[in-house]
Amino acid sequence: MGALSKRAAGAALMDENITLFACPICQESIGVFEQGRLVCSSNHSFDIAKQGYINMLTHGAISKYSKELFESRKAVIDSGIYDLVEDKIGELIANAETVLDTGCGEGSHLARIMAKKQGIGIGIDIAKEGILAAARHYPEQIWCVGDLAKSPFARSSFDAILNILSPANYEEFKRLLTQNGCVVKVVPQSGYLHELRAQLYADSTKESYSNEQIVARFKDSFADVSVERITYTVPLATELVPALLEMTPMGWHKKEEANIHLEEITIDVDVLVGRV
Image (cartoon, rainbow, N blue to C red; front, side):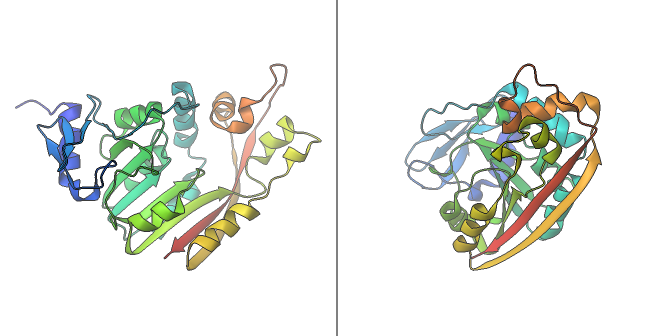
């Protein structure tokens, strides 16, 4: 018997974890139909793509993120510069059996974290190009094009929700958490990529950064919050500099004549953990 197609393999993985899903239109339960669609009890239907991911968007969406950006993001993450951050997240969610990565992009963080632990990971992003890349590179997890404002997941489904350098929807996070679940949010600290910021924004107000408002909002949203700062500097290969510029919004506004030279880069983040 031949290997399953990517669509069939994705459908099988979704079927094994179908209780995590709900129809984003009516929030009714949903099931896999003929290995090609998810169909709810009200007959709303969502196609499983041939690449093995599911598109559960209920509206059109235009993403500013390109295929090239996600390729660059994967190259930078695969280089290991975020290893210590991923290791910390892995420690924090060691006992989580169901993990949702919100704003997962091309899925590298989630895949690398889940490779070291038991359980199932689901990544969701509104950007189809990111989910396409995730499904292509990491078929061991479930990948979903979707919008948490019209959530395709069932209440109280996830032991851990990850939100790594990405916008948040705290009310939806709380709806989706299991009773003892947690949200892990990673936000930049003042020194994050400061070598790049110094060259792009020299002598401007953008050269400095504060996450004070983001952290305050997180603390307002959860009853039990802890914050841990992780900061370190690592060498950066010359060939990764263009990829770093491509993946970060800071690089999108670079003037053509700007000559960026980086031999090392600083990762400086706060890891916030929230429980309801």
